[in-house]
Length: 482
Image (tube, rainbow, N blue to C red; front, side):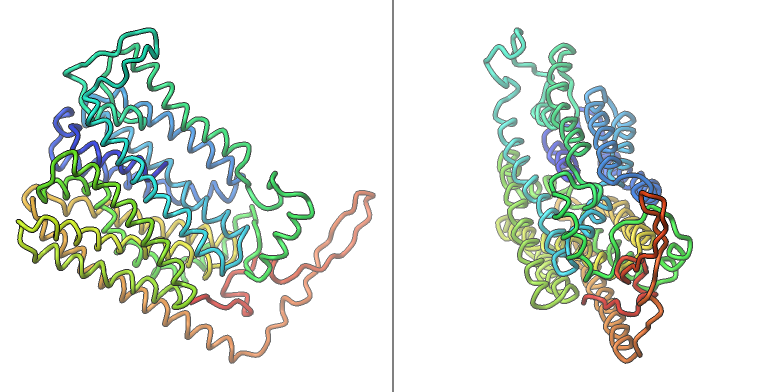
């Protein structure tokens, strides 16, 4: 859902949204930037809320507000209105990725998490495929959507209603349709997102302990199998010492710098249709070719998260940057008349998307302690927001149609990101070696807590080290996944 919204803004760029709302290129870039400015502002508060409240319920509330904001696009007639609703969307997205990361870490072992994160992240590509086909269809409807009597009213061609608006309306975006039909159309499309928020409320698990799709025996097994993570399950108490540890841990900032620099490329999300269109392809060709973007993204992320098993997270990320750098160099150097070569170079550059997906799973694998984990998630995703906030401003009108300056900057930052992730791996490998040479720390081997039984009697129960909510630094048995 979140990625589909971002793509729909980019799709609408070549379907009339810029002209119909009297947007300049700079204003269009701001619609992408304000999303991430809001994301930056609300990322840490959202992570605090995810620790305090049930994860699934909090995500459901944000998806509900998201749906309302999406439907509100129908009332927007100018840059100001679009700016406000995009700000609300950014606020809500702050709960989505960290919520998924927290739940993934509760259900899967560290070895499994990277693949699971990659699998749900590659659905971004699936969204690009679907929405590309939908947009292509709307272009060819030329506003006469159906000749069926859907609402006991005639749907006729309207010269003021452009293909991007049909596309946007169906995907809960921006329209300028007659009020009665608009209301009915937006209710139907809005219900899709509202239904999803309801499904999250009732079915998305807050933790293994409350997962409705598991029997009591299965819940115990889930908790026992993630014992190897040495990171506990969930703790609703905010711990100041873990918060400070997260701030002082060098790997937190290495991850944040890496994610910020790697996500400068993500600005291509809202520029992709403009880029391909300016290679020399028609509107219809550009829209249909967008489905290939999605297919490439799915294949790249799937392949790279599978590669982690053989080369580790760091080297999988670095190998992803190699073709991305090659694609960037070709986009800068190929002649303008070679539009097919430029197109394939652009598709090769999409490899730059994979390292962020890899880092999301890796972040869970190298952090323990619930407060520390939510704090690290917030800091790293703030880095994500910074990269996405800065990225759009490279794509200026003065650099079009070849955009050599933005591609040169992105190519350089791919190399910089690869360097940072190598430093992170070196730091973790040295720490693992240091711990291997230490004597066993028995401090947390025999920890007992007082438990009051139903009959009022008090008993002492031993708690395994893995469930003490220790941080990765305090638990010397913890080893960092490379």
